[in-house]
Amino acid sequence: MKSVLGIPGHIDLIAYLCIGWVGHFFDQPELETAGWRRRLPLADLVHGESWDGACDAPLAGHLDAFQEAVAAGRVPDSG
Image (cartoon, rainbow, N blue to C red; front, side, top):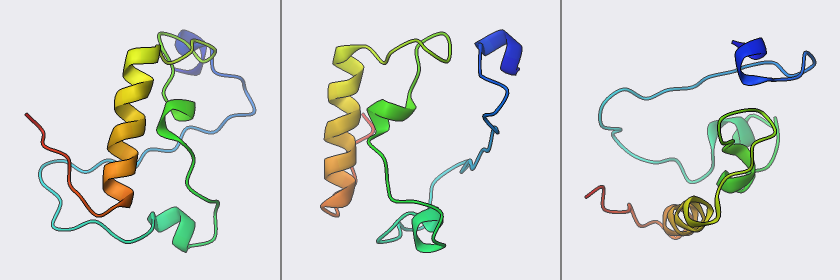
C-alpha cells in the first residue's frame, strides 16, 4: 500500500475505524488523551491520490467546518 500511494518508508500506517454509528464523541481525541499528540487540522491529514497530493480547497473548507462543528459539540448533519 505504501508504494501504491507513494508513502515514505519512515511513515507508519495506523488506522482507527468506526463502522456504523458511534455512541458518543469524546471531548478530546483518544490519542490526544493518551498523550500521543494534539489534534491536527483534518485538511493536513487528507491527501489527494498520493502522499504528496494536497487536499483540494473545497474539500479542505468542508473538513475545516466539520472539525469546528465537532469541537463546538455539534454533530454535523450527514445529509
